[in-house]
Image 1: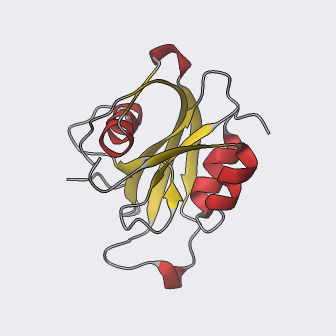
Image 2: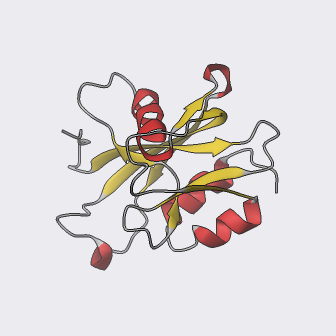
Length: 146
């Protein structure tokens, strides 16, 4: 069960997974398989922090573990979608993103059957995320090399 903020917005936590040299970012296929996205999802009620939720999403969706010391809070990002893009299945959300360095890419993970992952440079990733302003904003706030 996902948590909600004071205005009824869904609380979403995510991560910008970086290579050790911060030259590349790891994107994952969206659940529909049509686009590339950052690992993110609902901050569950039993998770004490947004970082714990982001770490779980990185594992479930991307099969990655992250270096503990590398976490950086990218601050809250408002839902920038127009009202016309919102629906019951995609309600207004508040995004909490972090950046972290990928420690390991596992060969088996919970959503392996429906997602692949791929490394991108900043320019490539910005192009992939152009239709998702909140993800693009998280990318821009990260210390990924341009």
